[in-house]
Image (cartoon, rainbow, N blue to C red; front, side, top):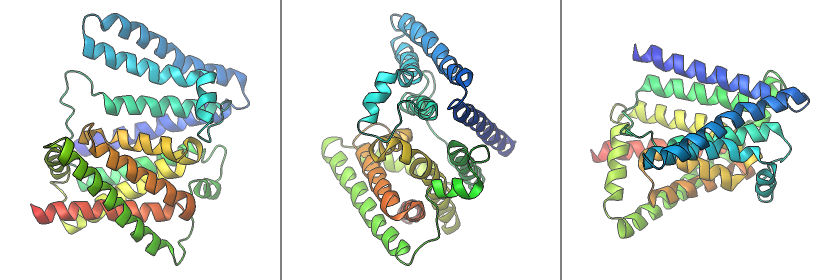
Length: 306
């Protein structure tokens, strides 16, 4: 039953993102569709801001979360904000596609950063089936984000995502970036041990709990491939050419909220920057290999240390 629910959620998310992406791309030439995007995100933003402002006086935590969602959906609708963002990112301030993408991305960031009050915010152990559903969902959303089927052909969408045949240097470069990612992770861990004692143990516990069902060679490989392919297609493949390396790395770090908001997040941000540079200069395939190898290595270490 749980597997059926996971598939249903994945298919639903893909359908929603394809519908929204089609709408946003159509809004480039259809004024009514463009206005519709403002209504789609603006109306909930106003309601959330009003509700959050009222709730904050009685339920501070809930009010803050509601306000944060209102800001996330509403801020990208303001063209001056998009113009300011465009000064240090490739974002087009006049693009309805970029505007809608920012609304969704900021909403996901808030959802990751601020768990709904009354919930534990804990994430259960993943299974191989869940990982397969996740990678298929992420890949489909990435293709939807670049307009596959309605504005780009399959080949055009694949090239837009930065996917190409590996070169002879791809694997050596990818493995070199694995070492750099490990340095970033270890560096953040050392800082956490110095300034936030106990955080490293908490993060290790979370990682161990998440991977408790897959702490074996096959599980490590599947987890590595799932995160490597799915997340890199979406973040470095689809988002980075529009949001830039730094903003994409920030979003990438924050959505891994299961590790908590502490100095470890600096390591995730650093890894995101490294993967972004790798995607820019060596392609998405290299970034996928790096991410997959890094994650598989982490799971293998967890399994080896018990």
